[in-house]
Length: 193
Image (cartoon, rainbow, N blue to C red; front, top):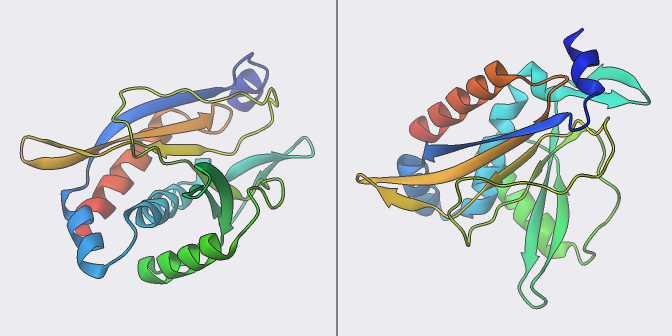
């Protein structure tokens, strides 16, 4: 019933922004010589994969639950200042993921390779701005249930390194409870790295 109610809404997606403490995570990423952006893609997608509600999609009008969701992220071409969308399979190990994602992004010459499938989480980091809210373009496709994750520029606050993170999700599948579960999972991973 909940799915049907929200599926017919004019704007079936909603967006929540929150702050996360990345003090330990940032230090670990630097010590291991990993890309902060790619490590964040991994962390966000690993945590989202743990929550069933984030893996539901509409496929040909039917509700489908995926076992695992892969990653898609924007990656800036520094020569043109235009971004490309890079698709990378989700793997279990942070370092392995970062190496694979970096290699894939560097080797991809096209800005867009194929239309994004239903089986990805979309990540679009915006490291130039610390924000308190973000909105996204709306494709007009009410059955587009692919969650979108963003994060902005990190900053110091009360001796900690904080970052704004946003989650846009389809309300037919994801509710505030699930956003709360995601925030809890992500903060735990960022603390324990």
